[in-house]
Length: 403
Ligand code: GLY
Image 1 (cartoon, helix red, strand yellow):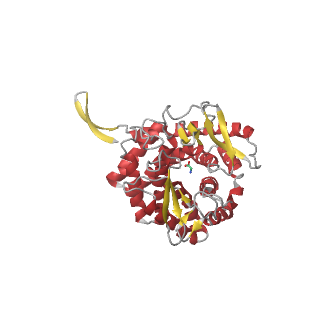
Image 2: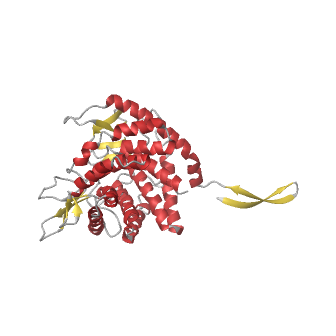
Image 3: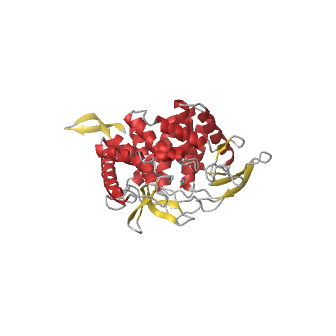
């Protein structure tokens, strides 16, 4: 912040311009160092993971998904797991941030093993997987060589769309009759469909908008808090929500913090891609829910569920939310936009502190500590999670690009 100050020098009054630090200017000044450290972490991670890489029980290659501090191990998963695009995605972002060719090689290596996902119709996650990896590759390398693969993926994902319900089925087999399970995480996969709509077939935009509209209608409480899993009755004579499940949250009626963050980011992204004002209004509503929640800790890093104050934090929920808030801030502008941006800066400053940002040898090369995968399943509690890193670096790049 620039201020005019009066100072006296040798008896003369002088007007001098001084730059006083704000949390945002402080963070922006640190970005080159954060990107450099992060790049070194991921070079180390790449080398370690290449030694660990193998195949899963079905013969699918494995990739580095996270770090389990209680075992002191990098957690390797099948390339069909929903997070396989986030590791190369972070490498692409770090290549973009630093120009370090080692990151480009690493990103290319981990991206190009994901191609089999283009044909997968058994989950909604192919949007995450392919757009975070190949999507960033095409954008950063300015190439169209991956377009056919991305369009094929969009086609596979849209096969999960049920036109009667107007929704993409998130979990479960494509033809399952009993359940039709939808989660707010699914909003994130609409970005691939929006890209495919502009580069291939407009029908993908209709699928994405329908899913966003029906989700907006049913998936949130009046105060903007998200349910995790909704089970829809898909019989045409009923077409209703038949069950609310807790999924990865504490209970069916509590709000799982990462699910809320997916909604914040997802509706902002849909506004960016479509210009539909209702999506931006809704993005603000779900963001306001999180920012104003009485159980949100003062550092802006939520506990794993808004109904579980004092329990483990989920750094990934904070980084996803920060990336969404920076974008919303730019769309909204004015004092409210400044409030969203300042909140994101608070979250990113917390995540960049030693409390959350791992030292090079602390988490196998991953950046953020204190993520929670699925608390109810006792899975990955207080771990490093590759998607937490992905949205953290993305948020910092967004901050830098809009300063
Ligand atoms: N989509 C899975 C998760 O957020 O854990």
